[in-house]
Amino acid sequence: MTTTTTLRPADLAEVRDAVRDTPGRLAVTGAGTAANWAGELDPVDAVLDVSALTGVVTHNPGDMTVSARAGTPLRALVDELAEHGQHVSLDAARIADGATLGGLVATADSGPSSLVYGTMRDLVIGVTVVLADGTVARSGGHVIKNVAGYDLAKLLHGSYGTLGVLAEIVLRLHPVPQRTATLVVDAPLAQAAELAARVLEGPYEPVALEWVSDGSGRLLVRIEGTDEALPARVQRLREVLGGGDEAAGADDPWLRHAELTRGSPEAAVLRIGARPSVLPALVSEIAADAATVGLGTGVATVSLPPHVVAEAHGRVHAAGGTSQLRYRPPGADAAAWGPPPSALPVLRALKTELDPDGRFGPGRFSPWM
Picture (cartoon, rainbow, N blue to C red):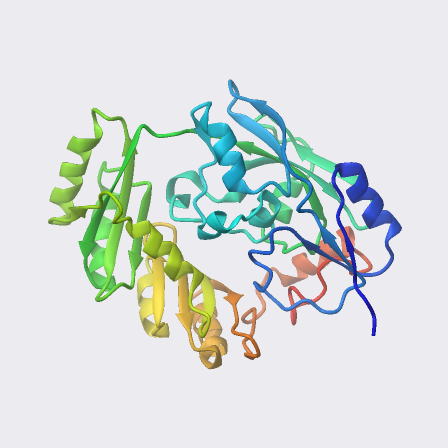
């Protein structure tokens, strides 16, 4: 029986040495909050655990940028930045579970506020990465408009640890809003899509616009602003929505949104991306057991029986969208990916260029490569 070696580097030099001096295939892991996302890992010779690679490297409050090591849990970074009135504008559900900066980039995770602030792809302005031959490569920096060089940050976004080991990440920051408010409207998905269109067409500036499959369905609309201006904005929003209750106190509908995003232990969880104009009909067609639908972002998370995952992949592909598995129940046979995308030759070429021996994350993109 072969024992898999686990390596726990604590700084960049140790990451480099671990990659350079360890032969064979490597899996990269951190907090493990997305360990069963995408394709199942093939056997590896060593696991590179970057959970000890933590802490802020440089924080420039005036420039609103921060550089931190990839194993840093985002929730810890948010706590540290709060004293400066700044934060990382990402609200993916698994941040509460301890998801790390590197893991959030590698899995292309995002949350409802990506409607305004974008995903990690938009928030990351620089990375330091260790490539398969031990080379330490840097891209970008602390200048938000830096466009020099090869943009490794965007290549590594959604790469699931198959192209390199993220060691340090530079992020743009945003001010912590003075106040937020969420209006909740009971509505089935089709009606919610119509209401969302009205909001997006007007001067209401929602930060998040999501439908959740609670009961017959609920539309959640979140806005941010100053203490003085927000009440009037909430009232104008209520008028265009034809009503709606403002969430208050312990009744936080976003906790339920996060719960639905995670799914249940018995169901497979599929993340779907499609044009916002076609996404509501697509989710209805898939007939998911539970769902969250970004009516402005075009991103949905659906829970469904494992045996219908392949059919769901096919429907999404036919609608011009993308899909990936984010959870499969133990022992379930559910495909991680749907039909191959048209850009697959480019993906394979990048893999060959950056990891010619296929060392990193074998199986993550199976059966594509």
